[in-house]
Length: 327
Image (cartoon, rainbow, N blue to C red; front, top):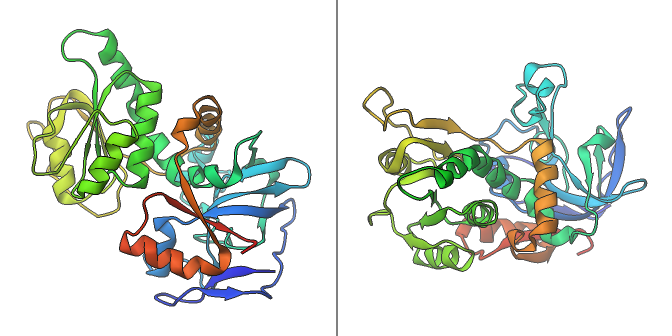
C-alpha cells in the first residue's frame, strides 16, 4: 500500500508505494483512510521532540471508511483503560496512552489498524476532508474553549463588564477557537498575533477585534494561549480578569511567576491538552449544526507529504493541509 514514513529524527519523509499492510491487533479493526490532516505535532515527531519509535507512519487527524460503521473519524489517543484518567473518559491524558501517528502507525497511508472499533466516530454526512483536522487541531481548540464556557456564560448573566475572551495566537487552532466562542457564547472576542495577516484572518473568522502583542488588547474573562511562550503567558496573566481563566495550549515552554498577588485574585490557570472522545463527539455535532466552525482545508496528495511539511514549517499555509491517500 501507499504510505509516508518518518525513518528517523531530522530525516525527510519517505513516500512508499509498497509499504507493508497494517497488522490488526486482537480485538482491533481496520479502516481505509480517506483523509489525514497535517499537524504541527507531526513536525515535532520529525524533530525528535517526542520519543516516537521510528521508523513510523505519521498522521493522527484521520478520517476513513470502516466496513461496518461507514465513514468515520478516528479518536487517536488510545489509553490504557485501567487508570483514573481513562475511567473519567480522559484517555488523552492517560500516562500510558499510545497516540496514533505519534507513537504508533497512523494515517499517512491508505489503510491503518485501530485497536478498538470504539475509537471510531461516524461522520454522518460530514465532509471527511474538511473535518479531518478537527480530530486534533479542532479538538484541541474545542477543549480549550470548553474550559472557559462556564466563566463566559456566568459573566453574560451577571453584572459589570460584558463577557470577553482573548485568543493569543491566531493560527489554525486560534481560528478554530474564535469560531467556537462565537458559536457557543455571546462574548466579545479579541485576537492577538504578531502577524498582521493572521490578525486579518482572525477578523474574517469572527473576532470582533485583533491586534499585535505590543498593543493593548484590554482585559478578558477567558484567555486562551495557543503559543505558550513566556511573553504570551505574561500577557495572559496581565490581561485576565479576577475570577477569570487562562488556558495554555502552546508548547513554547514559557513560565511565569504564580502566587497570591502575582496574578489577579482567584483567576484559574491551567494547561489544556488535546480533547476527550466525548468532546470529539460534541465537536462533530457542533460541525453538523454550525458548518461555519469547520473552516477551509487545502487537499494535497499523499506523495506530497514532505512538501506539505516544508510549507507548514515555513508558515506558508493559510488553511489546514490535508493529505489524500489516493495521490
